Length: 351
Image (cartoon, rainbow, N blue to C red):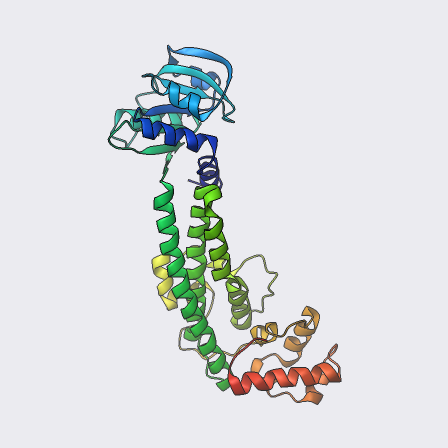
């Protein structure tokens, strides 16, 4: 299922939406249902019997009541109207299906044949609701299950975020001592990528939960705050060719081809980012270090990076050396020198 299609399904069936309210009502009454979300000649061609409803407004209660009859239901693509009820669907039996139950087999064939989403709800006993869309299927999970998964994922993000902070602090100390290798850079970026992947999972759950996910969303945003910027600055520091933070291709875009399990392979991460062998010594340009200075204009940062070329030369610069860079000035040069001294002495970057 494409991301856009999956997003639309999650959004339309999120808790609190009319469609999801209908699903919950039908599950509680245990009658099951087969609903085509879309109408027109293509749907009429697979319908037999039943009756038409003249622009009957859709409500969750009406759909649940109609589901008590044996036949299927057709609603408009926008889910504003109920079009037909008590219909016998006859899809092309030659369409392949991997489903086992009669209702789900019919639903998958209908989805492939009509190109409309098909809602299939099992009868009492299984309590399963699945939306078929084309060749894809999407099982609607209960809010309690989604909340449990969200909390588990948030705990994982929190643990990884601590490890990411440890990797950043370690990298700073190694940079001050001028003993960084590709392995150290890859370790930080792989942890950032894992945090990013898990945050995307939380985003999916938030969409699926709808209005019930506000607290989850706030927690997730707080945990991942600054991760994208950190990864971008580190990669810009060590990439073979200098890349600005405005580059269209991010670190995470470059790592999209790597499955999550392989993100633990530092050599694979380094290769995907176009970096050398893990034990190769590397030097930062100073982009991450300068990013930690508040209210320093981007043009001034670029001038410093272009002038000194490496963090080591920047750390060794005197006030006069800094003052000679365009856009600095004596007062700013003294402030920069004090900031660079703190990096050298304390081994941390930031205000």
